[in-house]
Image 1 (cartoon, rainbow, N blue to C red):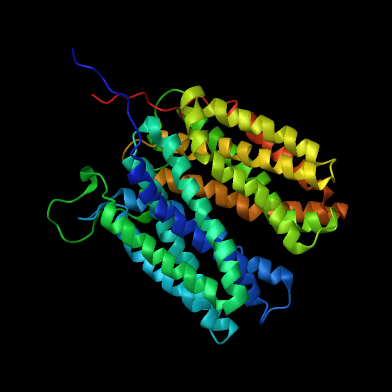
Image 2: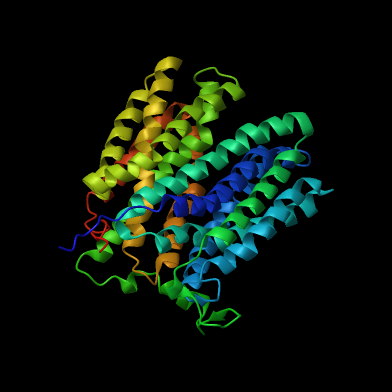
Length: 419
């Protein structure tokens, strides 16, 4: 009698794809941690430095959906994603290593602007490789793997990069990031192959369908969502993503200032306190995908949102550092339940031919939160004169996200079995 075997995740392939996400996270971690120190050489205004540091989010907001959709219509011997990755990583690695060598503000700004633009050209494609290569029921676990690799990239940037900066100077972390990005690209090129269905047959050049970027982006819009209630689910899911990233980005942007001004910690101690949140996110990344397979993506995300709302509410009234550390450890677990399972829900609605476009739309809403939320909370803080409103603000954002998720009815994994 013929037996059906359950699908199993190809961990080797997924970890290799994760090296691309490792490169993305490493580059952004070095950029966010060390570029402000470079800018201080010429700019005294913290506000101006903050504005410059939002360029990456603005470019991601504008360009990632367009290039993600464009890759869906790209045909080449390497596939539809790899041409962008192959061109983007070496250029970004070189520009990142070059940035601290610039002799003046104008030349360094030119390098940073081009770097941010090129990062937005290939990031969606890098993330889209995961759902391209992974069957629907396994995407939660696969997304946990690539996020784990991204977390490792961030830790390498902070720990190794920080150590090198202390011993060799501020240029060293940029060189480290550039070298590791090239090494990650080599692993992708040698060991990762896109599905055969997205390759041309013997044509050694890119072929783009004769459509404008706008028309290609529209392929990833609501026009392709035809099942009853699918459009409402998609919009509610995107709004939920926007709101929970609003809450997350307020904490990410202002936690060190909160810890310094409310808890009385020094800057380095404040950064180490926030690391408690990051470490458990990495640890729970893969289990979060398994939980979503067992209980459903929507239910897992809603449990995470409900738990983090309570946690932020409790943190509002606490100043005991040991209790805060324990709650931040729990917060990293809850954030993993939310963040790991959201992208698989988005690409589930895409279908096979719109994954790049929908990945770009996902990042559009997350980057929109990254641009707007720090400004919004900054205004609230200026009005109230205290950082103590940070956790209540984040909790309200999560409540709005939970309300939106309650209206989502699509995006669960499609059950499949291997013959």
